[in-house]
Length: 409
Image (cartoon, rainbow, N blue to C red; front, side, top):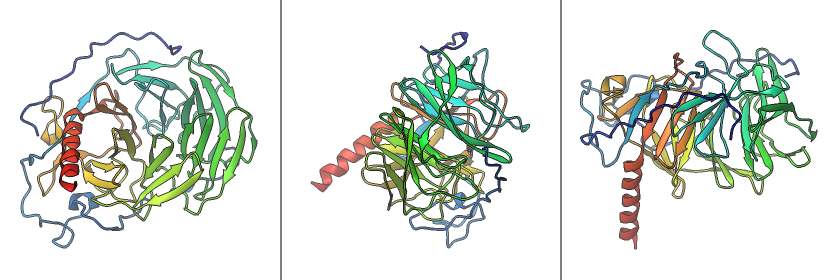
């Protein structure tokens, strides 16, 4: 059990699906340089014109814009989007640049730190029960961690490890361990070859090891770092692939998959067993490769790419079939109760596009087959929960895969 403040229990009212809808800134004192967003460089494969952040032309759109569509095209499958408010007595202030990770209980997400809309830096830690949509503040004791943004965290044996981050103009490479049972926080002393102070790297765990790659320290470091949490020794492994910062990533078994923050397409794959990094070519309509600060969440045999910083104000949802390494548009519909078509945009092709969000946390709940996204931009107080119900869509995807497999035999 988490050592947390008791919260008012909420009624977990779920709305029926409509039947007719078919990371920023250690002790080295390096001044932070703002990294400008890059324009999209086409890699190949169809992409909707609305995603490019400019007026479409006949050359880069399947259909030239002649009028604004007002009707959503029905598709073979779709997820249902809704917005829900938490009625917990306490909820975290809206923010960006927070860390987000999954606890040993796969239905709980842990977030912390970040910076608010008024520039306030935070050092609080919160638990989200994604099943009940309840927030709880973790009561901490021991070492006080300085407020910051762009930290990353992961959980091993109910210990939350928090690395680095920044508070302008400083970067950090300190490591903290927080016991999720007692709330005790302590500074961790390490040996070996530690990573430089930095913000917004990939940070995950595999067994007793912590894996770190990328981030920003005034440059884009490319070495892969591994921390053995049994002896607290860092080791580094040189890589040929250039570093990235604020890249969306998700853990799938013994690998980390990452996408975005790049001029080129393809999916990054970090093998946590052999400590190698490879760039895998993909097919299908992929998201803009230059998008930063997006969300990537694993469900079933797929990855869902959510939002991210880009010039356009609306976005389609993209999913990657991990086995086939093929991207496809994951169609979304508003639930018609908490949100409607006017809360998004309808593309030239009649596809519903969600309002763009970034720097959010995400979690997939197997029991309800929902993706829950929280905090990030746009910042609103109180910050609502962004919910995607993808249960029926998963069933349709399985059916499609089975049919294709039968045809190919």
